[in-house]
Length: 264
Image (cartoon, rainbow, N blue to C red):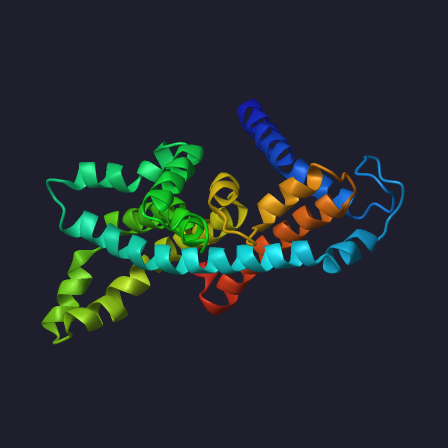
């Protein structure tokens, strides 16, 4: 059989892109298993000693807990308000839809560092500052909100309104129609948006660096501070743990929510 050269070139290109994207992740995991004293490649041997060092590090464990807490709250708040904002924008904001979408997407268009500086100035102007980490949480919600909004908006664009009309004609209330008809149909957009929100919030650096409260440190900031003075494989172990936690978040969604609903 004669092979199509164009298809072969496309397959090679796709494989090269996957290798380019996955190589740093695989390298980090390999470096975290290094038995040597320094973060070098090739590794000197295989060992889990640096994961043990991570487990015994109170600073890193507290930072992981803080990052998880902030990411969970950001995902919850952004999931609710992002979904409601998408419904209003698509269903009701007819004339102002374009301007409203641009406003909702502004955190993605503005550099993250500028958002962090603006929030920092605002928090000090109202007398809060960084004492209670309120600015940190608000900053994470602002940055993650557009991901939920965009994904739910995409799901609503292809929504068949006749299903809602059929539900209402059969006597269902607006709330029941939303809960039993609308929400299950837009669930893929909600799940995707929440996944993005959690992962982005867990790995945000600039906002966390400027808005973290006293005694509060997220994992990316703690890793940055650590690498300024130490260069052992503990940093790779932290990065590998971050990768593992991202995979766990995806598996949790798949188990309890149903990631298969994303397959159109």
